[in-house]
Length: 334
Length: 293
Image 1 (tube, each protein chain N blue to C red):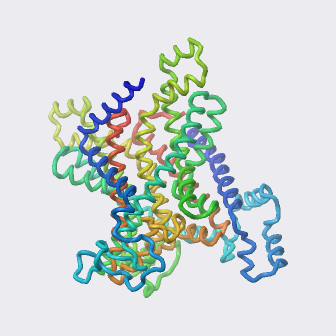
Image 2: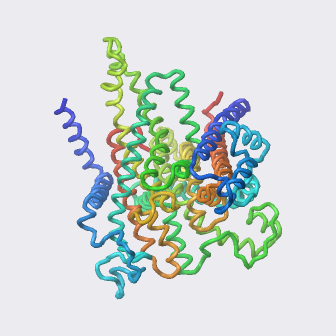
Image 3: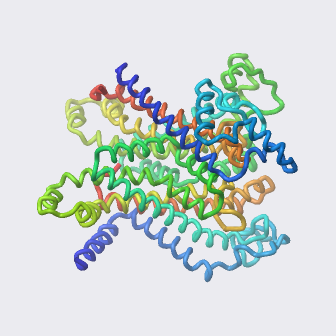
């Protein structure tokens, strides 16, 4: 087990190197001169050259990559061309916001998705089953940004129940400790900030949760149906176990293995969805940061964010594989 | 040979008919294709009038007493007919879908077949590159590629094609690996058929099922991702009537009560993607029951 995790962690190194090479070289092939952007529109050629030299932009690409990699390994992914802030610092500043959004969406998606899947499977072909699966079918086909806009329109603009953009009300004083708004307001006992942070979180997390929720519901249902058809379930029913015990104790456990795979795979979709959701709701997270970076041709920002996303993604895949071992003792990794 | 192929297609259609959701999907997709082809004839207005008719800006459609005549779904901020733009948008989305998936098929089949058929170090190299590309969330990779090669519809097609290639390569490879072990392939090798002949006459025609199924489902994803890029302003550029771009230009006006311009393009995306998903799921159940999830 330990050996397996070590091996998987070692395998991350070539993948991350590969992603950094791809991201780095792609951004440097891009048209547009970052030195010119930094210097401003009316700068003279001399100023531009100085900037180019200062940031090493005059060196060949592989040397630039080598310098960058060396710094990145020391936790420094360069500075933003636009704001001159350290990229690593900016990413870490925004990470708690994206994490809170992704975390709550994932919880929402798993809880509701799995529940809907189990109920649908145990009452196959009932009205409830058809309703859940119909909604799920719409859920997987919906563009996340459109859903966000619709939620914003209904609950923010017409009903005025919830705020439509931002992370927390500007009228509320908030003391930053960890950067996680919800955690911080609990630590400081700031009840008003907690309520506000939660209220701002509701619409974006519903929007982001819908697609994974729908996928999880569909997979849970089909996996449950498969398990319910198996012999051991028939034996358990025959020996007189209550239907509830059969479903919730024996069937669900066996049905969850493919669901875990899907949750892991959906995490990538969740990250991509976060880019869109954050744009719609003006959420100050990494997704919006990378999109703005692309608009401004801010290479260091884009490369930093892309590698950060890839890093999170591969780590989540690793965690998914490790979770398998716990839920299915039959699986042994060498 | 020709007759046999026809009966296969006939059988496919016959079995599709028994799959209700696939029939719905097929109908949706056919409507979509018709809209795209006939947009010139059925659209009541010019989707990109120039100069913009600003006096018609953000007028409601048929549901309102003050609705503007001849524009059933109202107008957007530049006074353009939302309905006409949605019809033309079908053309944009479908062509992006077809070409992006076409690119992914071309390269995915090439690399997937080489990796699966020849194995060894070629396989290792191709699959490592695929693994690396899988470490990026698809939309993020598309955004980065678009940032490099520039914005616009043609660039969107290329970017999405590149992003989907590794997925297709993986699917084809596993299919080729399976077919390669079949006895009839061994027979072909034994009678001295060249590798090329085996690949083109026997391996590829037998891996057509996953190509059709995943190609259809990939089209759905392509339409969603194309809209997402358009929404972020990195895809189709104005005044192209692209669904995602239409949304991004309109959603700020919902605060003022103009909900239609941001609602209907999204409904169109939903309709198109739903149709392709239903059709793809139906095809999968028919062509390859093993893949059923």
